[in-house]
Image (cartoon, rainbow, N blue to C red; front, side, top):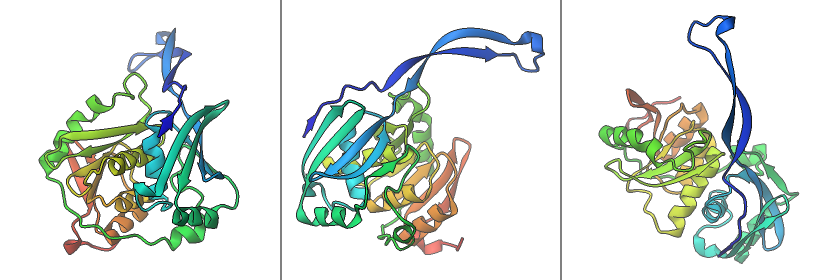
Length: 280
């Protein structure tokens, strides 16, 4: 797998900071010129066997993991072996991932490709139309609720593991935690679903057992996040922010344990183990 990336993860931005003390009056306002570090996002063209499939906006880091995870959660490939080759190169205005896939994966690409698909940073279901979303089949997983102490331990250590986000403060993260709450792997991106795809891609490339532990998201948990977790075979997902109702229904239908939102002061189990679920 060749990779040629020349984009920075963050860039300096000149700004003026306006600040005031609590309970300020207009005379208390101060202004100062500072330099902020802001996260970069670049377009990544995903090309399968020479066919343009999608353009996604990503953080230019761990791109191989993203390509594998995206291809898997979009149900283009069923295993890493379906991807015969990945070449990632820098173009004048972004990145390009040229992939060679097997015949079955190519058939799926051809069936879906009507025109190149643009995926915004906040876009989580690439190239989907209404029918493909509402009729999408969700496989089942064996949900296991993480120990509350393990979740609390992961919560306390999340920030220390967000290496790319330090000094930037605008990247989402998806972390894989062991059953005891130890954070084993983390992937970061400007897009929350991209971060999860990167984590899933890493897991697939390194044979990570997604049934032994839980995934921790620093973002909200919407439908596509639950669907991606189920596709990867995860048994539990914990997210800092609240879930959507469709995410809860998706998790419950699949047997995925979903704990969202989770804070150091408490958490909500919105999709428990299947034996005691209520309708929503």
